[in-house]
Length: 146
Figure 1 (cartoon, rainbow, N blue to C red):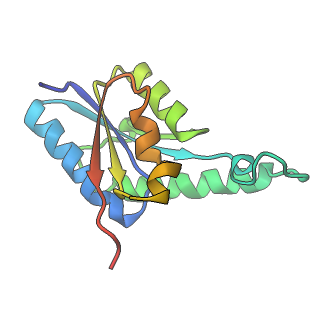
Figure 2 (cartoon, rainbow, N blue to C red):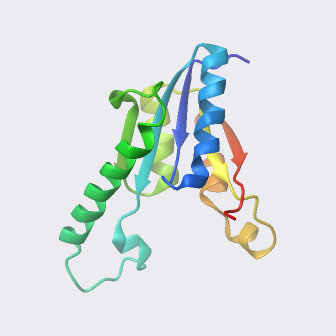
C-alpha cells in the first residue's frame, strides 16, 4: 500500500527520534507528506479533573515550553517545515484522530514501549490511538533508555 500523508505523533523525548526517522523514511519511499504532532494533556486530566485552583498560568507555561521543545525537536529533520508541526491541547487519542482526519492522513505513526502484563492491560497512548483510528496505525517499538 502506498501512503500519501503520514501523521507522526511524538512525546518529544529523545527516544522518539527513531519513530520520526522510520516515518520519514516511509514518507520518502512513498513520496508522501509527513506532519509531526505533539499533544499536551490538560493538567486537570492528570489530576483527575478535580483541582481546586486555577491552572491557566501553569498550562500556558507548559504550552510555551512544549512549543520550544517541538521547534528544537523538529529542527533535526529538514523534511519537516514549520507548517508540518502541530502542537495540540487535549486528550491524545481524540486529538490525534481528529488531526489525522482533518489533514487527510492515511497513516499514523506512534512509538510503543511494547509493555506487557499490567501495563498492557491499563493501555498506552499507542494502544489508545490504534482503537478507532481513521486510518492505518504503525507502532514503532521504542528502545528503553540506557
